[in-house]
Amino acid sequence: MEKLKKLTVARTNQILMLNKDWHFQLDPDQQGEANGWASIRFNDVKWPLIQAARIWEGQGYSYDGMAWYRKWVQIPAGFRGRKVRLVAEGVDDAYRLWINGEPVAVYGSFTDHDKTVFMIQTETDLTNHLKYGGKNLFVLQVVDLFGGGGINRPIYLRIE
Image (cartoon, rainbow, N blue to C red; front, side):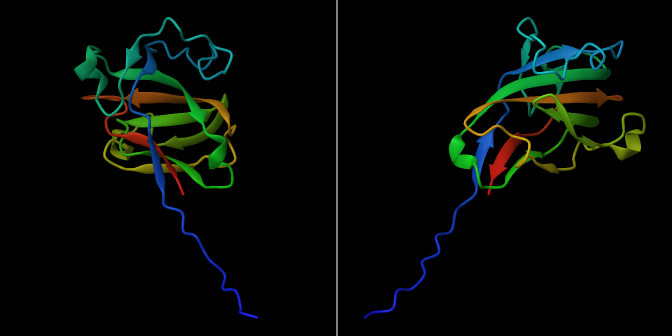
């Protein structure tokens, strides 16, 4: 009888780009968190759409301060069992991340511009935070202390 060799199939990483069509709202009074803007129950249908990978000033918002991005993302059931990371190549200046209404991570400083992540790639392991085979809410609360602001570089899921 011939011995069978184990066959290992290498999976290649997949990328799911998230740059297009985020619901966007300025928060000059910093009331978004208290008003439930990170909640899955909050209705953002009246918020305008904005594109990530571009500063918000380049999209008609001449503003420094707090703002919110919200996006529903369908996560395929086939991603279950794989590591899923949110990669943000740059957010000007700092941000908090919620997934499905739950706080997940904070990057940069909301008060110290020297601790900005505007040109620093951040990666967040979302493997245990996602609903596979369903829609998931991604929320970023972003602060821009001065200059350009927002998700200024590509943002995507990397599936390993």
